[in-house]
Length: 120
Image (cartoon, rainbow, N blue to C red; front, side, top):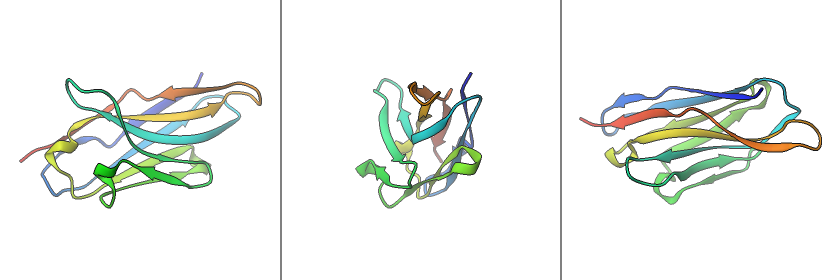
């Protein structure tokens, strides 16, 4: 069974930084793209950033220049470095991974979510 376990959320003041981590565990063949999404109260879940297995990245316009996504393929882990945080970044952040369970079976997995609150 595959699991994504997130860590690193918390309370931070505006202008501060946080680093989120998400590690995949269990039995699988390989991990393709990984990413971070966020959902604020009363709003839909939106893409924050994604990264391919080869390191190609994509960001939401609202976080470009402030957030950096990276991954360590040896550790099956994806990171989100968040700098210059704003109150509007407050949300539950979810990790997502597109995983090949076997050579012919692929599915997407979600983490449980981690709360990020930006407030003075």
